Image 1 (tube, rainbow, N blue to C red):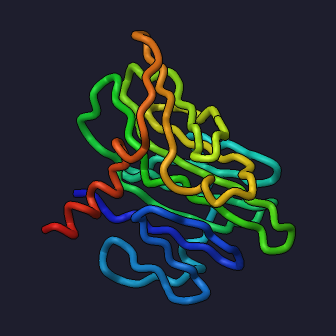
Image 2 (tube, rainbow, N blue to C red; image 1 turned 60 degrees about the vertical axis):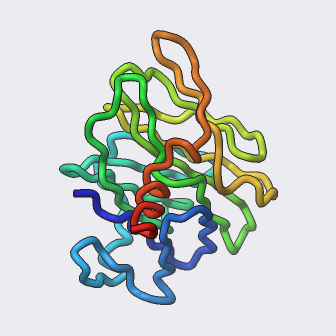
Image 3 (cartoon, one colour; image 1 turned 120 degrees about the vertical axis):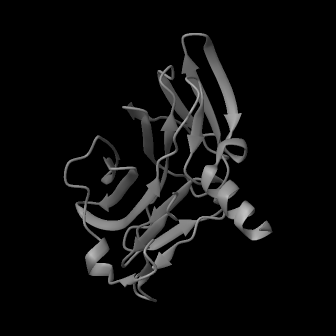
Length: 195
């Protein structure tokens, strides 16, 4: 059973576009998959033992697998600013890649620095994933055990956030796919809305 993605931000401007739900902790508690509510303090914990992590100018993303769930946390200068979970997908083809949402980000209210992030899942033959944001920034993702994630310093363009393009390497070569085509979060939300 797929659980909805949950994201929480504290004392930060969290830029999120697309269809993934985002809750600001200062405004309200986040709803977790069981239907209960949890306080922001319960959810704003860094991933303790990451499977993979990536850092860009003081902004760090960490990802770990817990059962059938991908856990993620994002820190600015060591302070957790966002956490989330996404259900892992079964049955990916060996050369397939999926995205868990669109490019989202964090704007530091103190410095004005902008950062972006994206994560997903890859089949067994995928050897590398690169994200090309709508503004043209190309960022190699870190890939481990079929999970990929990336963070990068964003420019001032609002085009940075939202749909992106993925460059996917396999032994057969490199393919390019828009996140619109492989965004499993948006696809599930569209299906639920129609349903």
